[in-house]
Image 1 (spheres, one colour):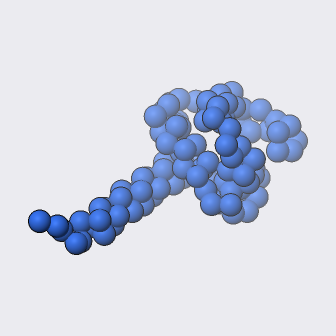
Image 2 (cartoon, rainbow, N blue to C red):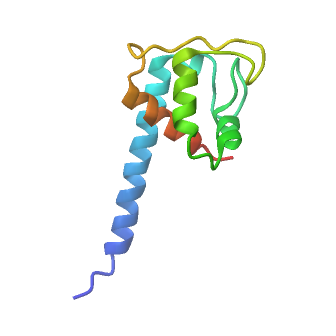
Length: 108
C-alpha cells in the first residue's frame, strides 16, 4: 500500500526540525551575547553572520578554527576592533558548535 502523503509529511517534519534547530541556535547566540556585536545580514561591531558564512564557505575546518578564535578572542581578521574571548562558562562547547554550524549555514 502506498501512502501519498508520506513524502510531504516527511519533508514538513524535516523543515520543522530544521526550523527548531535554527531558532535554538539563534537563541543560544543571543543569550551568549553574540548579538551585541553581530547581526544576520549587517555589520554591527563585528561582521554579519552572512559575511562569515561567505568567507568560510566550503572550508571543512571552519567550525574548529572559528571555535578557537571565539574562545581566545583576537583582532585583525575583520578589522582592528578586537573580539573578546568567550569562555566556556558563557557558551559551552556543544552550544558553540551549534551556533557556528548555524552561522555557517546563513544564506548568502
